[in-house]
Amino acid sequence: MEACLEALNSQSKASIDSIAGSRQTSQDDLLICISDIFKNLQSFSGSSFDKIFSRLAWMQNSTVLKNPFIEKALNLGMISIVLCEVVGLIPMAGNDTIEKLQNDVLKHFQIIALTLQNSSKQKQQQLLRKLLQSIEGFLGNLRIYLGLCASACRNLSPGVVLTIFTVIEMLSIFQQIPFELAYIGIANLRKEAQILTKICFFPSVQSFFTFRQAPFLPAYSHKTMTLVLDLDETLGHTENGIFYKRPGVEEFISELDKFYELVLFTASSQDYADSAIKQIDPSNKIKLRLYRQHTGAFNSPYVKNLELLGRDLSKVIIIDDWPTSFSMHPNNGILISPFTGDESDNELKKLLPVLVNLAVSDVEDVREALKCHIKL
Ligand SMILES: [Mg+2]
Image 1 (cartoon, rainbow, N blue to C red):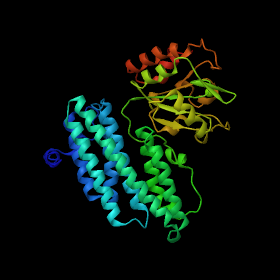
Image 2: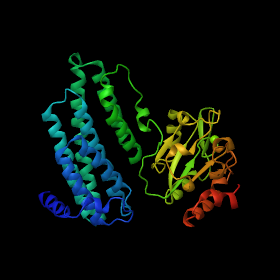
Image 3: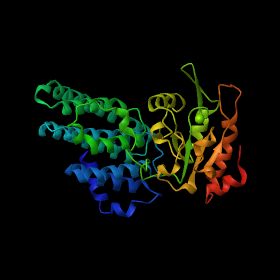
Image 4: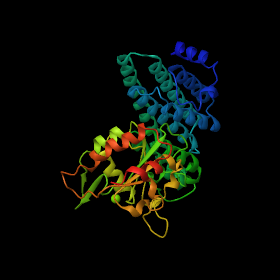
């Protein structure tokens, strides 16, 4: 581990700023970034967390990170940082505990750095297994600690107890969601944890996973084009409480993830949409989700205002079965026929090559391209 740290410190001669913003990255760039994260982790101050998050987001989106082991390792590392910080926001957290948790997080990043430096897939897998074990131990410690805090609730304000329970609930969610959603959840929790400790009602944990106001997508994106997908009757259909997947939906999502930043934008409720998405996108290719509470414009409750995304609209396409949904931006929309359970439906299969072509042809403005040749 020490050798690893030394190697990282020698990397730090290069400036992190010289690589930030670059889309083309190398393995060395990643090591520079990890080295910078180490430095910030060692000081563990509020401003250092902002830097850590931006570095992690950058790494997550970097072009060389096509390695599932490293990607998973980074997600886990980020989660451990965040949990550690959130514990620090609980007013009664003891310094010893915080220090112990911070040391655990540093260890996780040492393993991540080793994973990055190792080109053997087998070795990377071993390291990831080690990291998982280490993080499981960390989460165990954290749960015990939070449980102790909560059981000492006579000395705590109700708001602090509620905050602890919120964090415990988030713990279980963090491990199952994509990096981007965790990132948003964390950003919200960091901003609101102090306020939470002063309120006396239990907030919906799910509500943490979207930004509170537009633009709803995080500023960074590693893909030039954004594909906005409707849920009901576009990707699937619900009847008598059962969700039916549209034929070809899994392939549609996993193929298009290679070319587009995928966003779900549904007029349905968040709980329902999240459970449906688990069925059609188990590996979390759709990174960001907007729900009923984000729709509404032009005196129509379910219109989807694409400007809320915070993306360049010349690179945004929306697929929806209801034209009113994209009536604010008709030239960004592709209307798909509604799916109501027909097993022979092949609309997604037909649409897939069209969308791939659009992405690879690097069109300057999708609105012009869609106007010219696509009206399905
Ligand atoms: Mg629909």
